[in-house]
Length: 120
Image 1 (cartoon, rainbow, N blue to C red):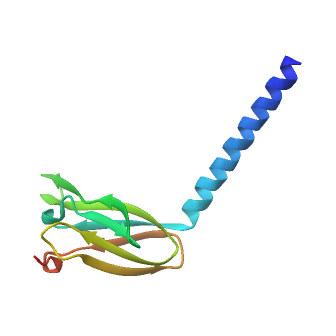
Image 2 (cartoon, rainbow, N blue to C red):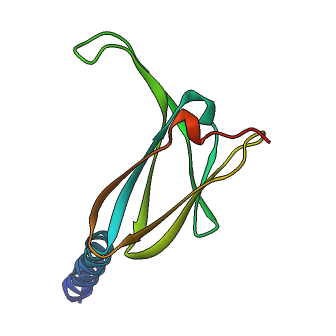
Image 3 (tube, rainbow, N blue to C red):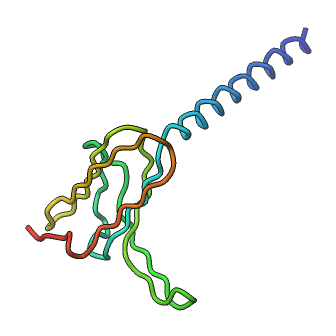
C-alpha cells in the first residue's frame, strides 16, 4: 500500500513539474526580451509596460578592457507578443515613451539618448 501511494505521489509530482515546465517555456516562446539602455541620469527610473511597473533602470559601469570605459543604465523586461507602450518615469524628468509591436518572440533593444531627456 505504501509503495502504491508513493508511486502515485511521484507520478503526481512529475506531472506537475512537466506542466509547469510547459507553462514556463510556452510563455517564453510567446514573449520578447526588451533591453532598455540609457544615460546615467536614468538611474532609478521606473520602467512601465502598458502602465504596469515591470522594472527599474540600474546603473552599470565598466572600465578598461577592449571596449574602453562604459557607463549608463539598463533594464531588461519581458513582454508578451502584441502592441505595447514602454514608458520610463523619473522624478524631475518628463516621461519617455516608446511604442512597439511584436509579432514574434526574440529580443528588442531600446536605447534612450541624452537628447531624449527633458527636465520638468
